[in-house]
Length: 112
Length: 114
Image (tube, rainbow over all chains, first blue to last red; front, side, top):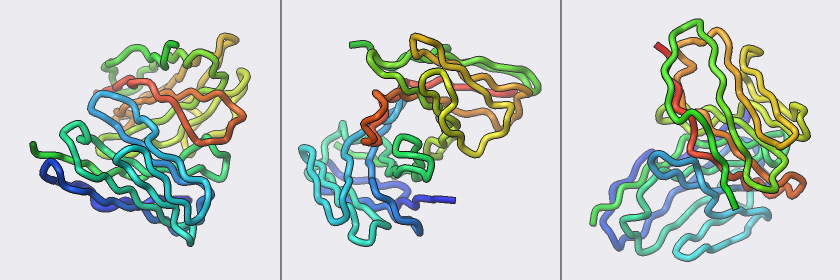
């Protein structure tokens, strides 16, 4: 089945540092999504990518849809304490665009 | 605008019992999906409901079943609970038809099976 592999599993950084994480798959995806989950909350969509090669920003966050359609990365610039959480990449299953497969997540810790 | 709400937030059951989890979708959303999130894992798709019908199912056995009501709220039922069913169960709603992949999640129901 479709699987998404995220790396790194966890990151410990200092406030103000930039962060980069990525997501790869052996399958082609036509949409790449990045969600963030805060402790005790459900995931929230950060960025959606719909076209190969697309580079999209949302404030300090930037994400790219890989040209091969098998990878995506998420960058966070000038991290702040509220960036703490788990970041998931996700893509639609073969069943449809709103039936998602998620990676295992990258857990981000920001030290003030 | 009211977001997705789930109940109960926490519950403990024993092996073999049955459980019902409830979800109210965000206002204006007619599609509800359920996900299981085991500890340290990403959410895993269970099934989706649209217009009161199951509209796609992940790799879960038949003892996982659901309902959607005319007001678009939904229930997830799990029979014959197993220890591995311990997880956070997330409900997500979406407006349907937009195909953006954007889901609006509730805070989840944390189920512990002893």
